[in-house]
Amino acid sequence: MEERIYDLEDRVQDLELEVADLRKRLEETKKPAPRDNRTWWVLVPIVAIICGTIMSIVS
Image (cartoon, rainbow, N blue to C red; front, side):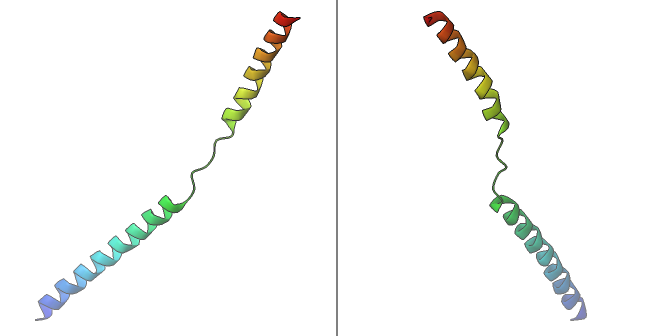
């Protein structure tokens, strides 16, 4: 009987660890992904160069 109780306690501990791990994963998935603003700063000079080229061709 005691052996069965020890087995059940071990299972309960394993399940508690698994629940804690799942909660941690859930919190990580709920976090919003960090936005990468660097791509916008790359596009600004490219657009400026293209506009400058078009302006020089037109004038």
